[in-house]
Image (cartoon, rainbow, N blue to C red; front, side, top):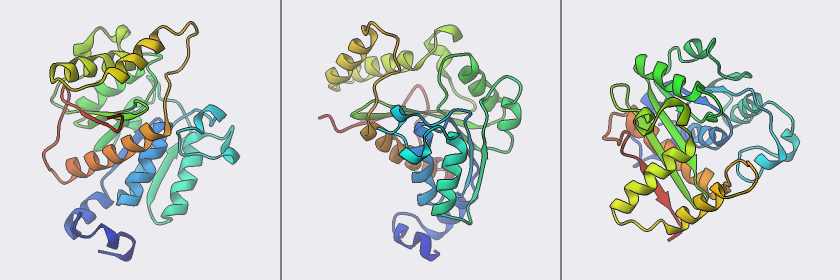
Length: 249
């Protein structure tokens, strides 16, 4: 194991470190994807493609992996520069564009795991999952739930979010509601999350969901662990199963 990853020893063996180095992953959405990308790169994933047409806004700075000097800069390009500063030899690529019906097929070419961190403001997140599944790609959905992280992985041959409702009804809240119901059935205490979700639904203005830096970094660690498990063919949970971690209790 080379010096860069020497402190990974005992947790990750030489063969696994070699496997993940060249394992091609795509981060579609560089908001929460910015935290995931850095955690994955530092762990040893060096073949990363970033795509996002959005710019860094001040409201992103409470949780996303950007700084004040990055304001109004493209997220994908800015994140690319940060990752290359961490590891100049890593194979990092970026696309400063939004995903749409015309480019989604091309973007998903030669990828093994794709992170879907896209906003459910159109049918693109659903189309993204459908095409990825057809291409045999595992899709990971990361969610920042403030004091918690939620991660779901969709297997190429498994169920997807369409079991939760019609395409036009699918959004982040549908997924969170589903998870809360599942946790309640397992008698796991999530009353704090239910209150946040209820208060958010009752806000008079139409606002983005509330999120904390804690959730972003929890999710980054969860996603990197899941990446490692899938890439090295260890047992993993796939939707409708999920990973939920909280420090609220």
